[in-house]
Image (cartoon, rainbow, N blue to C red; front, side, top):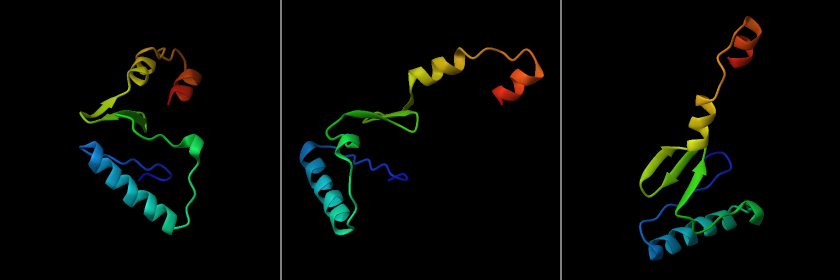
Length: 84
């Protein structure tokens, strides 16, 4: 759980169903509501805090690396301040 993100990881599908049941029961007991539009269930990987999360672990999202690589070098003080 990170602020308002909940990620449920499981090694198997049957384990995942059990984990989801526990998490959803806790959410229901706490009277917390979830947004169906923001809910994603059954994905094998996802983007979380700029990182790709999968069964293989964490990896940096390629678009983030490309964006950093494509940054122009500051040529004056104002551009340097903006960059920082």
